[in-house]
Amino acid sequence: MPENQENLTVRTVLQIAEGTSHEIGDKFHTALTETLNRVMNVSLVLITRGEGYPSHSAQTLFCWREGAPAENFSYELEGTPCALVYGGDRIVIPCELGLRYPKEEGFEGYCGVPLLNRHQSVVGHFAVLSKDPFEDVELCQIIMRIFGNRVEAELQRASADRDRDALIQSLLHVRDRLERQREASRAANNFKSDLVAITVHDLRNPLTAIMSRAELIATYLGDEIDLPAETRVEKATKSADEIINTSERMEKMISDVLYSSRTDATDLSYAPAQFDLSKMLATVAALNDDVATRKSIYIHRDFSQGLNIFGDEDRLIEAVDNLLGNAIKFSSEGTAVTLMATKTDDAITISVQDEGVGISADEIELIFERFQNTSSKPTGGETSFGLGLWIVKSIASRHGGFVSAHSDGPGQGACFVITLPNAPDLAEQKE
Image (cartoon, rainbow, N blue to C red; front, side):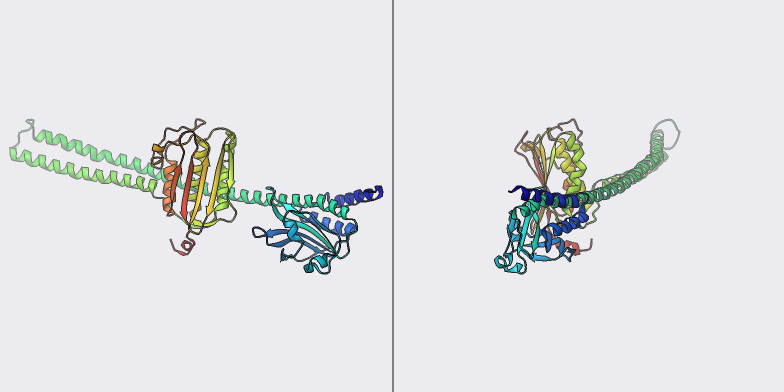
């Protein structure tokens, strides 16, 4: 490149950089467009995101025409140079654009670069079109490459901000729900404690009566008092009848306490509604990130966005949290845990796969029962009460589904899968 042309290129790039360096977000895009319009004489600037997989159309996120903001629109990629950009190529067409692509009639020059997400997949593109030919192709390439990267960074930053804000709101929502659940649990425990205290207190009187009547029977049938035999038997029989009646009342009191405790412990509340499973799973993963990080365990998320299902979100949070917490608890440092979800026409599956201590074949069938602890032990000295998997089983069953487990044996890791029916029509039923 001649020295004068190289100096011109540097000055042009610096001019654009100076015009945009202090701006972010929409202000950056506006400043970039205004500067590009000055240095390249562009007629149309587009920043788009793809629609469909693979992308078959594009929706503009920002659009400027003749240096002024224009209304956003969507268009089919077929028959446009943008289709090549969505394929991952940087495209510069300096002239005769309308002849090569009739859809672009009225434009001469085109420059386009793909925009990638943080996973390095093409999700959109940045393009400029001009009614005049681009005279300096190399300058166009440099400008689009440099400032395309800046546009890409801005979109990724905005996406990260949205994800962060959504996660914060979701975490706050979960925190509030869990706090309400704790309050309800605390109230229930207080009620049960009060009930037990009252019952124990009230059982003292019938027990005292039973003891007294039993002593009277012994007295009536002994030799301590002088009574006719018929009278002794009559009084002893009457005392025995009172013992029976009192015992029946005690049995009723104890049965009421046991029924109350059993109901509170096993009857799961169920409040189904439509919700986004992917956001719920992201929230559960975030809640477990700190615990996993302390053991240098990586939680791999493998689920697409927008998995809408019908169920009780609080209960499913509880179930998945139990599985993910268990996976971390029984995994060694430096391993990974995978949280995955898939949806078909018939079923929704949520799986948690770890690389931990595994489970022996003869214990697989027992692990979903209450208070069942296997021979596998947590790797970090954590406690295990044998209730978590029983809770998961109960929640899955309440949703009309089931939970299963698989392991190739000790030291081979384990995979737990919750399978729920995918029944959209349930949303229309009244519970």
